[in-house]
Amino acid sequence: MITRRTATAGLATTLIGLAGRGVAQTSSPIFMEGSKDERPVWMLTAQPKSVRLRPDAAKETEIWAFNGELARSFRMKHGSEMRLSLKNETSLPLSLHFHGVRSPNAMDGAGSFTQNAVPPGESYEYRLTPPDAGTFLIRPSVVGGSAEPTERGLTALLIVEESNPPQVDQDIALLVDDWALAQDGSLTLAEPAPAGRLGSFLTLNGKPTPQQIKAPPGGRIRLRLANACNARTMRLRFDGLKAYVIAVDAQPSSTFEPLKASLPFAPGNRYDLLIDLPPEQGQAGVVTAMIGNGFPLAEIVTEGDKRDALPPIAPLPPNPKLPDAIKLQNAARADVLIRGDPTVPSAYLRVNKGQGTPLSEPLIKVKRGTPVVLALKNETSFVQPMHLHGHSFRLLHSLDDGWEPYWLDTVQVPQNKTIRIAFVADNPGRWLLASTVAERFDAGLWTWIEVA
Image (cartoon, rainbow, N blue to C red; front, side, top):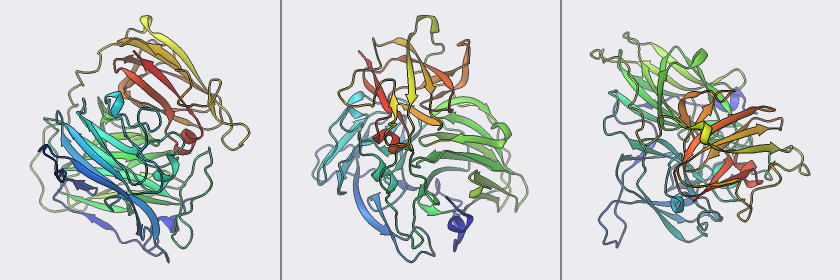
């Protein structure tokens, strides 16, 4: 369990400067050594490193990181090609999934399913042009082997910038993670438990919480929030802040204020928000993780000269690559029954009749362009966050008579409840529908669809 002591002991507030794009380490493309191709490429080495995550800890934590840095943030312009070369210097096979990117199937990064996982000592280059702008999570995805790399911190953000982004003073990426630390600060690697590993220590962009953001009075900031935890589902609360959601899971939404100033936040979820700051100096608001009595993640403080008035907040333009409507009457339909008890090894988690394997039959096979409705029924006593690869979907109303005014790629299915999602299967290939809790994915809580 996270305690206030482990969250705040010995922490000095970290300043996020007025300039720049935020606290995450932003990586610029570099050129691959010896390559005749002059297009830029990110060269990433996944490697072990020792860091002192908790400042008062007696020992350092053995983590895995990209080029030795936690919570890296990679930015590119919409319409550009992304080239990312992964070198694996860890002890386990790796592959990277770009969570939310509607990529070509060969670049989906589902190890042992859409690609061979990259063995230790080997390299692989991901090459794609993301079709959508937005905030995406880079996460390990290997069938049966995702939990430990995720638990060791091998996650990052991919930010594909709009050609005409909203006017803001700062664009800040915030990656939330939790860690299972012993009292001395060392990482506790328990036996894989299908219920999912809950950490005892929170970080924001790989640093202790809370952190501080300073911005001008009357200013406007953009927050890009992503949940990189292995299993921890929480709510985010915005205390003393006027927050407006402009995108959910990378896709533009109808601009809205969070109900009761809070948002559900499961592993894999992302939100883009605009926050208008008060015109007076010294005013503060807090982004809080609602765990127990709540843990402050970031404090936003007004400082400096008041800025000129900004135009009213407006929605992002809708994504023209997603359909205006889904013809539900023409949809192919399938049921997804999530069963089992993740706390009992003998009552293994399963979808419908069994656990996911690379050789299992698809849940459904459809032709490209077919509308699809999936009924996800959770018969377990745990909330089940599920992610559909390669597509964005609508969350349907209970009678299939409409949908929520946003797109998702990750949804929470409440315990003993059924929800329905709808999408147009317009991306050819084999696509996972999988738990975003790394340990449950490893335990086989996934299925797949085929788009021919």
